[in-house]
Structures are given as C-alpha cells and as structure tokens.
Length: 105
Image 1 (cartoon, helix red, strand yellow):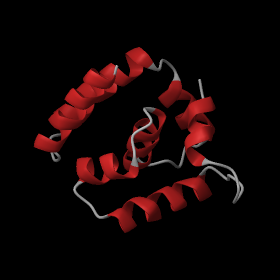
Image 2 (cartoon, one colour; image 1 turned 60 degrees about the horizontal axis):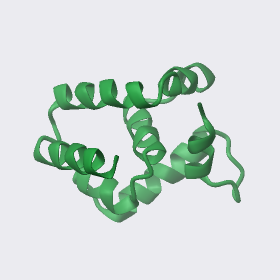
Image 3 (cartoon, one colour; image 1 turned 120 degrees about the vertical axis):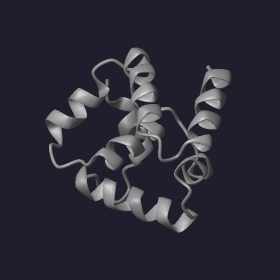
C-alpha cells in the first residue's frame, strides 16, 4: 500500500490544481475506505471539500509534511487547518484528530 500511496502523493504533487486528480484520488480512497466520506458528511455537514481532503489524507496516515507538499502550503497552514478541523469535529483538546479519523469506518 505504501507504493500506491507514494504514487498518489507524486501524482497529486504534479497537479495540485487538477480537480480531476482529486476525483481520481477520491475513487481510489472510497474503494479502500467505503462509507468514510459519507459518514463524515452525514455527521458533520459543515465540512468543506478541503476539510474532507484533510480527513482523507489523515485517514491514510499521511504526515504533515506529505500534506504540506501535496497542497503546496507551509507547515503552519497545515497545523492551523488541522486545529480548525478538530474544532469542527468537536474533539477534546487531548483527543487525537488522526486517531479519531482512523476510528471512523
């Protein structure tokens, strides 16, 4: 699976603004994580597309560095978005965002 992940990361890096690539990624992601996006969208209808992207990336256990490179942003932006996402999901301060998303089936 790491080889597939590396392929996806490299593909996204090469076409950050390509919405078709996000759609392709989503198809792959849904095959490996059925119902994840649906459950998140149902439980948290205010999540944006970028929020859902972050959730997918974290569910796939991507590092902050991977996400930073994929989205072409700095580390502080990644941390800020994860902090805001944690608030949207109403997680406690000591609850791990990554662990929570891993538990969503």
